[in-house]
Length: 103
Image (cartoon, one colour):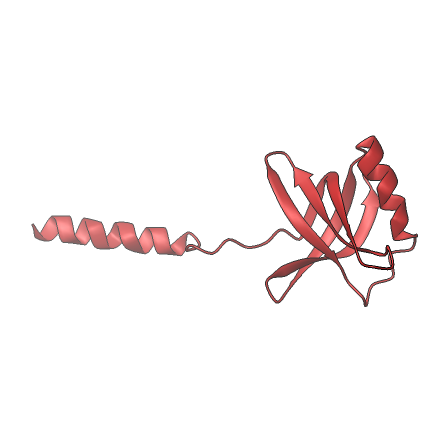
């Protein structure tokens, strides 16, 4: 009986050392933009990015200069051309730090 408890304790300790239940958000994703979110002024405020079987809700950061008109992302939606995004988690949400055409 005591051996079983030691084994169980060791197994639980090993599982908790592997990262726990919360998963870290990615810091970079390359994928296809499925949808754009816009405000009343038709400015892009976010988008849904698909990577394989996962989708991510990405927000546009007010403090980032992306280096192009965000309306260009409409072409990526229409053509299905992928983008690469560097990301940062802020208050539990993903914000794009950069958006580039992916190879």
